[in-house]
Image 1 (cartoon, rainbow, N blue to C red):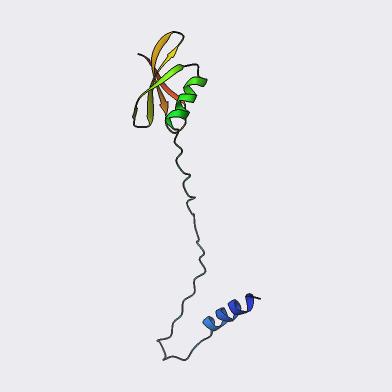
Image 2 (image 1 turned 30 degrees about the vertical axis):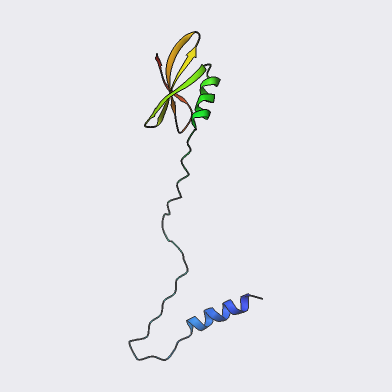
Amino acid sequence: MARLPVVAGIILCLLQAEGLAGTAHGAFTAGIVIGKVKPPKPPKLRYTWGAAAISLARAGYENPRRIGAAGDLYWFEAQRAGARFRVAVWIATGRIAAVRPA
């Protein structure tokens, strides 16, 4: 049903109209890109403080306490096997990046 008006509109646009010699011109675009197209970047994922603390708990650390964020890392102070540690967790992946004695 809707095809007829669309086809009629395209045909009317492509018909030649009278014009002075050398002044007539036309243009047609179809939205086609030839060549390599970069795919859209996936959204950046960020672990929250709570999710990072869960990662620490799964790694065997107890009582994580937030210290701060620096760059791409969350820093915690946590306990494991009776000793206190400062632990860095990657914000993007939730993996442990560094462990230092507190």
